[in-house]
Image (cartoon, rainbow, N blue to C red):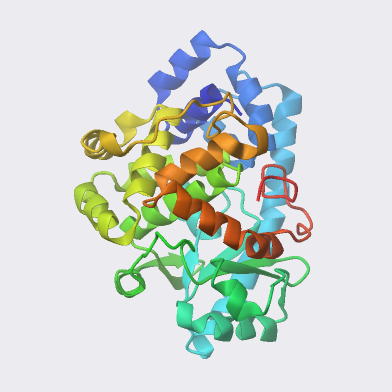
Length: 370
């Protein structure tokens, strides 16, 4: 997916008809190209829903539309299974008085795309307090979920180097998180995170979710990790634009950045948010954030981007991405390398497992840089 594709799909999602019209005038085949890229990158359902605001079949061939529809039908079936699993797990966690927050997946689709089935997702992401990691794992196992993540030297040791384990019952996958990110330079205040949680109703049940400020932090840290691994996904760039555009008018960006100086998220926030706004050409969608970033431009990491959004040269062994990420964290490159090298065996063990059935293109898969 190209930068032009990302910019077009952002405008389609936002319903920006003047920008859409100008783009299609300049690039008559843009929608058909975008349809192919969206199918590959897990944005087929998002695009198909956005196309409803355009004249029927506007610039998209019949075969491309059918491919998008096929993905939508697949997502319908997957979403039904995942929502059913969520309801059962929520009941089990509530009965056991186990706190948890709902991350990404159906919540992200419903809140930021307007429909629980309006964005592709392949699993459930749950966040529990760090002290409850082992207990929450046992609850998942009691519900029939087996841990797919491998460990080195036991769960407790591995958990000091990663922020989550993957579980599955065959058809449904659960990502159990106990941190937003595991990195020695990132010290998100867990008590503040849980005290500021918000509530969101999904499928008739109320769930705890991250506050707007922690939602931004979570997405920025997640994308930084993916950039570091050489796996930045265009749909996650689109997600960040959706989240920041949604909360731009209400969020105190200056306070968020200043808090980041204390908890190690300042560099990651400034660099990832600026990168996404630049790639998506979306500064007008988050003008208050843009002004806050402009006053902190001295913290930006400068590197040569490659043709692929979110990638930097040299691309050999993801060297450009690693170098960019090392400087984006609020630590020294030497400290970053020591952590990266020391945690590598544990991260590989946790994440190098067989992909679940039905995982679409564009999702994490073995073979990329760890």
